[in-house]
Length: 123
Image 1 (spheres, rainbow, N blue to C red):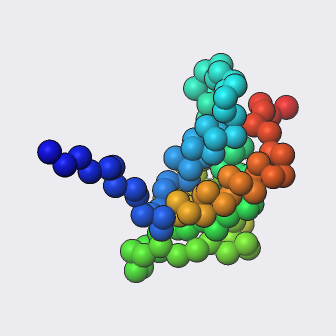
Image 2 (spheres, helix red, strand yellow):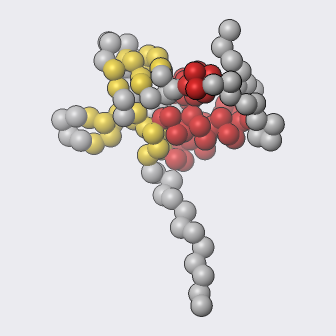
């Protein structure tokens, strides 16, 4: 019997921003990961991590007209909210389908680690 190794996901795969924030949190806090107090704390932490991610990595939004992913520009990105599930743009638009490519996430995690980004509860 031949056992095949698990297929690796493609590096250009798009991950939802909230998933990317959770992966980043996991990577930056290992091996001594702080516990969440409650759902609100989890949401707060994921939001802070996602906000840091959009500062160091390219993120994408779904273009409703073409149904294709397009990169957000620096001028469009404003604020991440609700557990990294919403991105408010500078012009007031609200996006719920924001993603980051898997290979960009790897670089972003390395950049945040190099900057000394610490995952702490907001004051």
